[in-house]
Amino acid sequence: MLSNIKGEQSPVAIYLWRLLRHTNYRIQRAKMGIQTDFPVLDSFFSLPFPFKIASLLVVGIAFRLLWNRFRKELRDIPGPKVAAYTGLWRWLDVRAGQAHKNAIKLHKRYGSLVRIGPNHVSVSDPREINHIYGMKSKYTKTEFYHPIQSIIWKGKAEPHLFTMRDLTVHRESKKILANAYSPTSVLAYEPAVDECITLLLYQIEKLAEEKKPIDLGEWMSYYTFDVIGQLSFSKMFGFLEKGCDVDKIIETIDIVLTYASQCGQLPELHKFLLGNPFLPGGAMNQIVDFALKAINGAASRHTSLRKDGVLDALDIESRGDMLTKWYALNQNGSQWMTTKYLVAHLSANVYGGSDTTSIALRSVLYYLGKNRDKMRKLVEEIDGAAAAGNISQPVSFKEANTHLPYLNAVIKEGMRIHPSAGLMYERYVPSGGDTICGKHIPGGTVVGINPWVTQYDPEVFPDPESFVPERWLDSTEEQLKRMEQSFFNFSAGSRTCLGRHIAMIEISKMIPELLRRFELTLTYPDREWETRNVWLVKQKGVICNITKRS
Image (cartoon, rainbow, N blue to C red; front, side, top):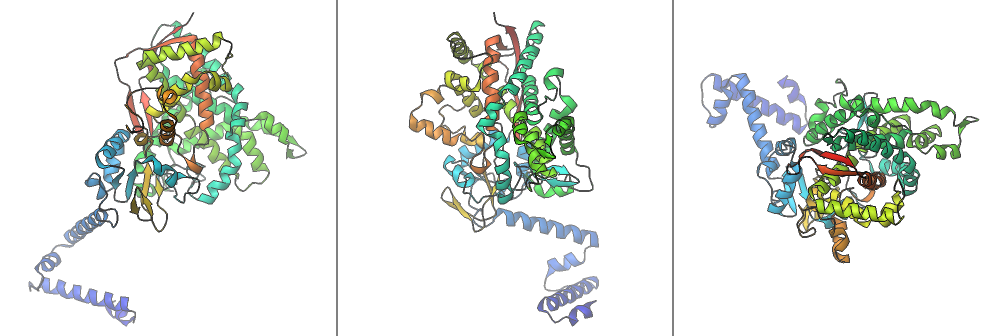
């Protein structure tokens, strides 16, 4: 073997041959008990084979840790000391379930740039939001999104709009999807949302008659899931009707989020876990199956839309739901709405379109319950608008925006004090590097901003831990501009959440209808709720006593 290697004339082959010959020489000398000029090497070569391997592993790991710690241009960025050596620090931080609170503490201690991993930097300056996430930004999403949070279709991870990393594919896909989420389309969805609100209020009234505490937080999830069913498939999933987690889809999504949040800190492990093609797709497959069940349940409608083998545009608009609109694009041969994309985008609606809004609703209700003066002020505004004939029943989205300014401030403050996402929105620094907060950051570094950090900045939001809706009404124009710049609940730029208008219509219509019919008080007003960060910061403990108002 050595002679064969020696026969090669390339410098690399010659070097390898010499290295092997020298190593063999040391091994033979060590076996004979003859020392050389390198005692450490002599001791190593005299070890049994398993100990040699173990020693090499220890040396390799130590070298890698030191390489991580002293990485050029990141070595002087402050942060937890252990975090610079290994991504395990991030994993442990996320696994503890309170990473959002820890992020606030870290930036208070270390400043606007915090190194939270060997190649990860957290940013707190809201002025960098447009720089990193703006429409013209070249920063791209990381493996935290795709493949970890993508759906599994035919054994392969397929991205949807939220997880797409390719800027061109995202841009073209967004063009054809945006119409379904536009303000005009949202207004057309109002009757579908009203149906869900009517059923929710009916169920709450029945429960209120039992005079027992009600977990209103759970019902917020049932409401938002059924709204997504209406908007996506013109059919509720059945959460409100049954008053339970249909097909355990809420539980399944919680499992997916937990996996994504933790594996996302060590994405290289994904290919050995749920990313392994030889393993079942697990919980993510259940989400796809749930979406396919809804698609199949609505499929018979589409045969009636065909006229001479072509889908009629007017009929499509009259149906209004997303499945119908996107199915039309699929049938017309759009390369951006093939079957895999159709399933991916509808699955994404189920996966991401419900929890985020229910989190915001729970926040509003919880903090109103904790601050009875704010609750009274909002109820008085709603009652006054109703008495003046300014709002109908149910309240329209336009009426809520026009005649209920304090409601809008309450909603904004609820999302400010408890953002839905609790980890930074990760992005890769473009090739060649870039300057962030006056510091050059090398290309390929993972950077990001956590909405909890910007929305708890005391310089922008005085007394940030207090629920103060008035700040959105009484601030100066300059201060309001800074607050809006720091409000990062829906991300920003080309990646701004397309579903934000849907979320606002769900919240703006439901809250006033709930409060004009019922009196809500927290069953345990002195007890703090439980929060757990699994990428989304989910809450438990919005337990209420509910009585019907006269």
